Length: 316
Image 1 (cartoon, one colour):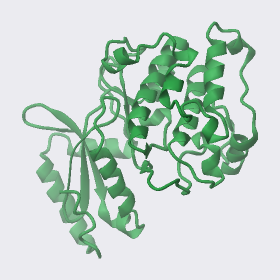
Image 2 (spheres, one colour; image 1 turned 30 degrees about the vertical axis):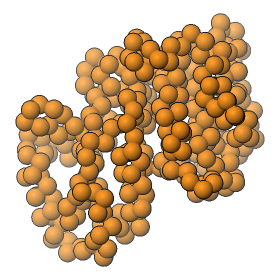
Image 3 (spheres, one colour; image 1 turned 90 degrees about the horizontal axis):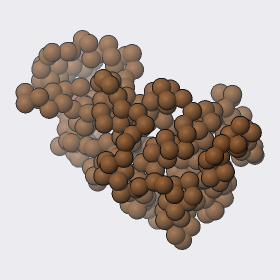
Image 4 (cartoon, one colour; image 1 turned 45 degrees about the vertical axis):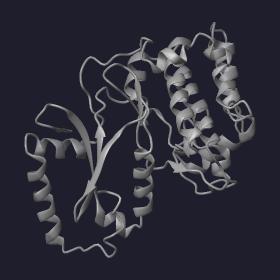
């Protein structure tokens, strides 16, 4: 977290160039920056600015202070239809914005959805996102439990892969487990379940007042043939938004922040690893310039030089 003298707060993401260049990940980072720079949506993290120095590139992002959706789900427990509609409809709205621009997100999971201080979502982490141009993509990427069958089979995929992941998330929201390979950590076992296993709903869930509509939506999204998924047909997102599951959803009110969220954070919480938290504690209260100069000094000791120093020219 960084703060201007005026009091405005932002999230600053620092990326060291050396490992990035050595593992030839420059294109991926440039792609992430280009996608974020072209997006302006209330349910998607906003890139404020990007910049660089000799050893680092930086993303200055809006600060989202309510923690991960995963934590909200832990507090709420299994979601009822009204709660599940709020979060899934918010993701649908964000996806519609991305997919209209032929951007496939490809990493939907509750850890990559943050909650702002009013309880509304923000999609974050666009490291795997890609602009679909000239057909389909074939690179296998994503989190195994959420990957669409066509991705696993390397048959080519597009934005409809995100609809499959949405189906996985809604299942998890409402039933508390993953529909495929829930107890597996081995990729091959997870992939086999994604490709072959049936979607199973507990009898207690089927008996819920919203059970029928919920199952219909989830099954409609978890179609192994991409073209048969809800939202993938000629009607596009109208077909998805008109589903009975969303019959009481005010999509306009949702994006206008007129719908009360199921969970509103009571204090600021920032998602970060223990390593990041340790770094934050070590620099707390210091000026950004001072910290940057110290980091540059440490990097100079290593003697590394970028063999292609012009690759990051977009980070101006």
